[in-house]
Length: 497
Image (tube, rainbow, N blue to C red; front, side, top):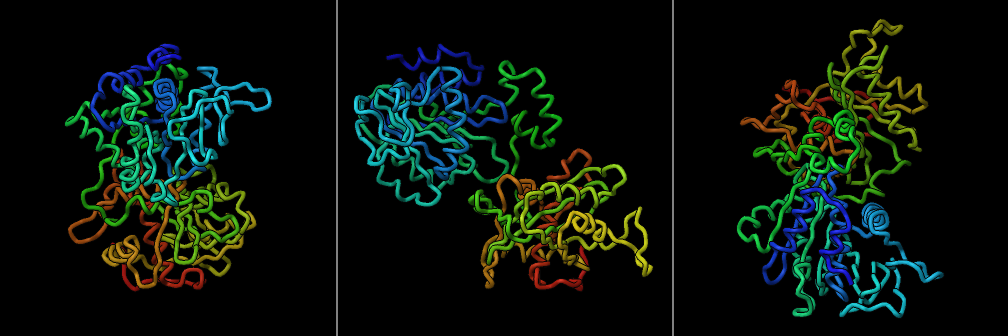
């Protein structure tokens, strides 16, 4: 059997990956549990390092049983494991076992052959396990639905990917399970919790940075590594970073490629917004058979909207959409509408409610008059794109934008989920990420109003300025004025400051 060090010698790794694995083997010498955390951006080699470390663990810990900790088993099977499996196959020639031919190196989701070794503590159910011939077994453990069920486990190791969606309270349960088979292994891989993740954009996963602080205090027990796209250039196409610069926003590029950390606003207008608001089942969150509400914020240089669906007391923000410049022969409202229509091409229910910024009741620079002499408004232009695309449109704009101190209290109660009517908000963690980041980065003034200065900064990514957060305010103002039950003009008798 190879040692972990011999296995590592078979492949070439970048400097950060090498430092991480070396740090585990030669730095984590403490007794008891140890934690190694790697946060990596797009193309940084983070996933490769995780797949390699699993094979190292397999070689170092024969007959060990551990867990892969994640939000749901579906997340592991559909989003995480295909990448691991690809690395094992491409770089090590390790393939899934075929029970008909007897060929292969690991078994998925079923009991392995009788002549394979068994772990010291054999799992009761093999349906969630990845197993190897030497008895090394990794069991997938989903924490979202039944976290407390894992309290009785005894494990030799743990792996985790996308730690940014793993809750701090789940971590407390996980850490207490790494305690099995004292004295049976001498490898630093024993009792190791290996955490991997994409960079967090919000408060979700901020516990991962605790490892960095703890590593300064106990370097023999904690290891922290941040790895960026630029750290992995040797293994990427020559134009990879240049292409990312074209496709990513400035903020995404600085976080994913340059490794910038987003600072949390010390005093946020949305003080009760936290990671629970994006803790959703992505597969059921959006319903193609329900109507859509489009809440628009009109602006000459940046026009955006959030898309919502009502699900009982829950209000689901399913997408955030924005445009920076108009398409040829269109203004910004029409350009945004075409973008939304494209995004909703496969949506089955063709009813859309359109509301939002009262400035949309103004005429655009290119507007013409209706037959009755009234001007065609930005809302009219926006709605017509949907009508031409075959949508049933209910136009229900706000006629006045509400005062920010009124909205502050409203949003505080909605996000705290303390309202008597029980309404609350949830945001898709990917499709509506721009909306939640806009909210997270909205400061508050001393008068409990939103500081909107980010909208006037040339070097600020406007999709993460306060524009999209305004659409959230408009949505709940509209909802409490009747929402879908109110198909006429709605309004407040106060102005927006």
